[in-house]
Image (cartoon, rainbow, N blue to C red):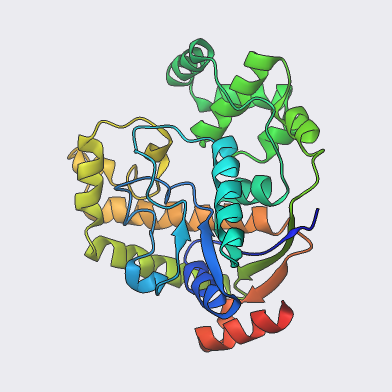
Length: 307
């Protein structure tokens, strides 16, 4: 079967993925498939830097703003939805352009990785949640290190969602997450894909962009959005959105806004570091340093030459 031609634009937050993805879609007769684990949620607009209609420039975007924030949404569900979107795009004679910073979404979709067991056992999940509250994340993280050191090496000890998921997979199936992922990689990819990895030669340049973005998000009403979010009483994956949990101490009246904003900027910088670590693993990606280009047009031209 002939493979589907795709281009993937990935990189850390605030690196300009959205703008480049739209520019490539305009040049290549494409439509964008978002690969962002927070932009999928309705109402999570400012915190997830969801593209505005002006930023989309008339380019159709898929897998944005379609999941209720009270719902959990899995990687397996994303791969199903992304494959469906890709088929629809190709059916219209256009090229799928994958754009986002959620590395696991991109890897599973592009490489046709099907997780063997993406369901969950509510009893086991509740038990693990109770344990992390009573025993702390460090003890459970050390437990994962002994069970599945390869998975633990890829998970930050304070990333409760991924930590609990890795333990849940093991206690539900008796198989480590690493082994499950190895077995799931036995399917050939449907795509002839080129990955464009946006990076920065000067890390401070990226950090300045991140801080500027956070300031713009606050001006756009991030505090009010966070307040509305918590009023919904959601406890799903959407609660991990950077921007909400950092502002919660201010909303609860136990910290100043300046303190919370500083923590938000720090959390966003740390997230960008983790994204860079993930995307550097792809040795086949074509790397472009955004601080070497004076304009989006120049960057787009160079990317098109590389494609």
